[in-house]
Image 1 (cartoon, rainbow, N blue to C red):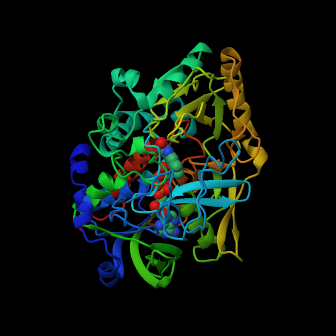
Image 2: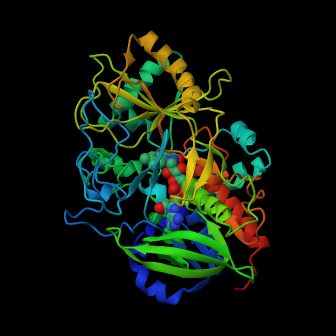
Image 3: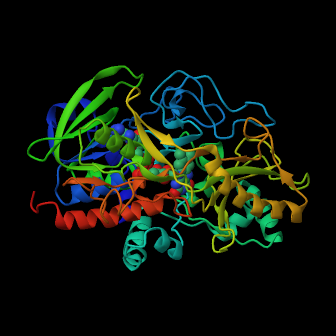
Length: 527
Ligand code: FAE
């Protein structure tokens, strides 16, 4: 089924997702889904397939129209305004190379595809646009270790998840596996082979990482048979080819039901409940340059939050603390974590050349998660700079017990994350233990030039915001918000701060599980 849906990518182009038409049609919709990321896309597809008229509201753009240069997205080496959500300069995760800010560019503020949201000591990267994080992420499609999933969400039936919902999620997302024989000879994965050798020499295990980037397409890229994307430094500002982002899988299928419409450049600001129990939304509509076109009111019976950990949590923290949804409890805004993210680089030995070509899509990780003393899962990340970098880069996922929470700031009308830099120290300690060993066995050292100052470990940002509306605490065990009927959370804010692997497969599978229950129990049939 997943593959069939992928074939209907053009559905997105053909289906009306224009703001104008739907603005007139949909003052009331039986169901509204906020956002178009993983949780939202799953929910909209299942609602649409069940015959429920559903409007999706997305603050970003639809990324389907090529710009003046003929491409939809800009690459990482020459980013333009399309790269970034309303900033006048790009904000790359690798702040520097040899301490120089080489990768960032001044740009015109615009509704670009990647946002970096600053909250004091922590900033959070998120995707903006139809497809949410799927537009900008590294496509690593990893199912968590079962024992760890059972530990973080003990009340969720793991048999059902591993027997039914993880396989369903992977098939719908179009997860595929690299051909190991090709990996061994591919020029674009020399960087991963060099890192693998260093890890194995220190006694660590590595494994291949499944992906929603089409590895067959990548192989043809390397052979110069098709336009390059992963091999042309495209990742975090979007991929022009090869990646099965949600607009090509779940969202195409959702639109294909004929019951789902998507309204773009539409940011939900406020949620209130009306006397009859339905929900009223205020939606700020902008153009792609940020000019406000108006505030629109929309009502709905069933409201599904899929605005991501930051977005959904902010909506409910604001609704509680401004008195619009006063029955929301203390659990709203708690239990936030960064999935233990920490980034670091190692200097390669001079003879360990990786070459100028690095695939933007990681395909291998160092898997030490089963070590109870020091669980670390480190993705071997590319530095697709187009030249020899003598660097090995890693995004390590660690088991950091620290959690943050959100506080409403009435002046800014914003939910502000409370997270102190020291809370990241357990992640650094864990990564350091593993990579100190790799360095000492291999006679290598850290790179101190990559993060703006002289630090070797960077964890003042995360790619993996999780929690804020934790399953079983802010909601029941199926994402129904406590204190309100017909109000649901679908996305990464349900997960209590950690999944031990890259999170989108977990978010997708959990959303599948929850909406199946909600459709069976809460939504009247034959609507
Ligand atoms: P998400 O995908 O963030 O979608 C939320 C959507 O809601 C966005 O489109 C927002 O624009 C929209 N929105 C927010 N607030 C509002 C509002 N008020 N009104 C209307 N719309 C709103 O949510 N994960 C992996 O598993 N593998 C990877 O390789 C990987 N690499 C990553 C690389 C980068 C650079 C980044 C940023 C993330 C990466 N992730 C990866 C994380 C993954 O993309 C993320 O966990 C999911 O996208 C989260 O899914 P949600 O459904 O929670």
